[in-house]
Image 1 (tube, rainbow, N blue to C red):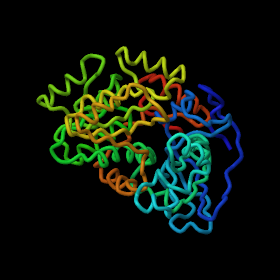
Image 2 (image 1 turned 90 degrees about the horizontal axis):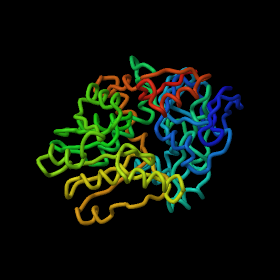
Image 3 (image 1 turned 45 degrees about the horizontal axis):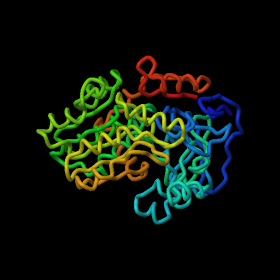
Image 4 (image 1 turned 90 degrees about the vertical axis):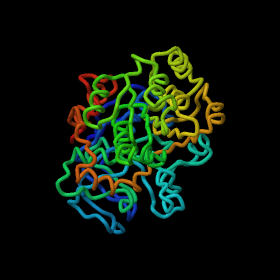
Length: 389
């Protein structure tokens, strides 16, 4: 079958790889209907995520048709259309039982990486390095889905493939930021990043009753899309002092909840960006925490900062003093999708959550490298490129 493979730093290629096979009785094989580029994939492509090997199939956000099921699969049958959660959970360990699915004890077959990097292993994720389980990714004609009864969810009638696609990862990730960030009615929420995850975090905050939601980015198309489809206020950080602007818009107090949806390759227009980029390129730090720093400084005293962006390891100049002296709550997580996906599919079906606008471009799997070229370099106003078989 055809699949998009990582072949080295900034090198992708569509190649022939072996078809997937059932390995366990809880596996199923699915046929790709649609996948999409994701900002976290750019960290893989750029060489910032460890334990990638030439020939690894990438991709983790997808909707598919069930082709074959193991004898232990009870909730799915061939022909079903399903959204597959990007993180794999076994459904039985302590973490899965407590709705902390991305921390599953049993789905990362290479636990040593996580133990060395983070102190404990994480769960497995499709197409995201051998440090995260070495599972083949979803940019392929067919995908093996482990623990299928716990990670795949039927798409409601009337919901098209593209709308369902983003419920695989972007929508639940954004929703988690607002949920675990503790957004409540009357809050002012600031979201750093107007990509798909940032937009979904802003929408979730509004649905949870936030009085005002303010989104921050620099890309005109993303700012305009967020304002039009999400209804969020927007700030172009290249034209103003973000901290001062947020104080002005909140009567001097600052946002109650700040959500960082940018990640380890954050940009800014200040000298700290040059400092961070130089240290990252020299591998003196693994991540650029520009947006996190800004969120910590901008958040009101006693407020909450939630980190949604992907970070791999170490950062420099982290404002720990601000967290302590301002009494902030700092949280972060990889996406506990199984907790949210069924509810979010219903919200997409009812029209409460709109996702189709995120798909600005469509590319065939044969040309999947083009999808990442459009996405990485933000060509032609690309917000997300959908990959079809």
